[in-house]
Length: 82
Image 1 (tube, rainbow, N blue to C red):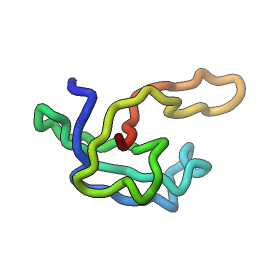
Image 2 (image 1 turned 45 degrees about the vertical axis):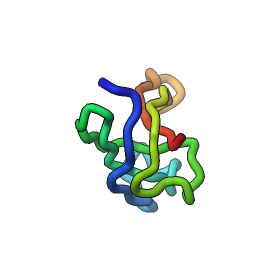
Image 3 (image 1 turned 90 degrees about the vertical axis):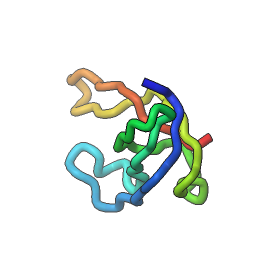
Image 4 (image 1 turned 135 degrees about the vertical axis):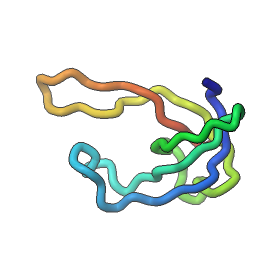
């Protein structure tokens, strides 16, 4: 899958589901990749004013979830505005 795309829709999350409540507020976006596939993903490491429809974004590797100090940490891909 391509690692770059364009934000086509977004929302700023203030009331997050269990496991993500300490990350609020954060942006949840629909990104259209360069091959026209659309994905829903969290946008990280980006100033709020840069998260907007039409903004270019690239895939980054980040921590997704850690349950507690003794559990495995889940890593995966999120996106960042470029």
